[in-house]
Amino acid sequence: MKKTETPRKTLAAGIARALKRLHYPLDVMLLCVRWYVAYSLSLRNLEEMMAERGIEVDHSTVHRWVIKLVPLFEKTFRKHKQPVGKSWRMDETYIKVKGQWKYLYRAVDKAGKTIDFLFRAKRDKVAARRFFEKSIAQNGVPETITIDKSGSNLAALHAVNAERETPITIRQVKYLNNVVEQDHRAIKRITRPMLGFKDFRCARIILSGIEVMHMIRKGQLKTEDGTHPSAAEQFYSMVM
Image 1 (spheres, rainbow, N blue to C red):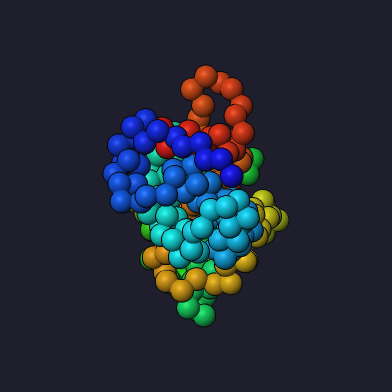
Image 2: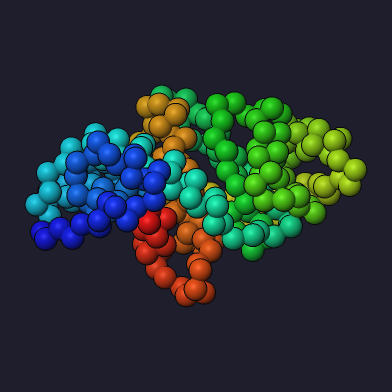
């Protein structure tokens, strides 16, 4: 396979520093990272796919690339994320780490655009409040938030409203939350071949990469010239 390398001198400073001690061709590393967070693939799948292309890379090496690069991609994405709507739908889904269930808090607006996400070890008022505060800090204050019948989510929103002059309207209407419950499936579809995570920190980083790629596919990354590049092109644009 012919390798066309992206010149490292053209990289954003943070990405360039992260890649300083990684000696594989840049295009190979970026391709592996993108495929891992974009498609239902295991690390061993990627190792085999690279071998078919004449590239020898161990699955553990691909894992290191993911852990090193994804936080930088997320940071860049958040700087260029499209604004979201004022009507939010919030829910949490389960992710297994070391054989135990952990909790991925997520919210979308009524159009299905991702508001934010937060991975927590516990499902309680503290975790829910942290999610709401993070989401508001990143995206502004919503007019309404729709939740399920979870008492901890309701208590967290009451705590948030207690510190506001104009409270956020809270709705507990199950059918209105279908949009976020359906959106969970896109994330779970990618994590399924991973067969659970071995480490909470790594799980958090990988999930953030999956979420970022999912948002890119939904058109949530601002483009400077108003064009509509592919999801892959948008992903690679965050490197330069």
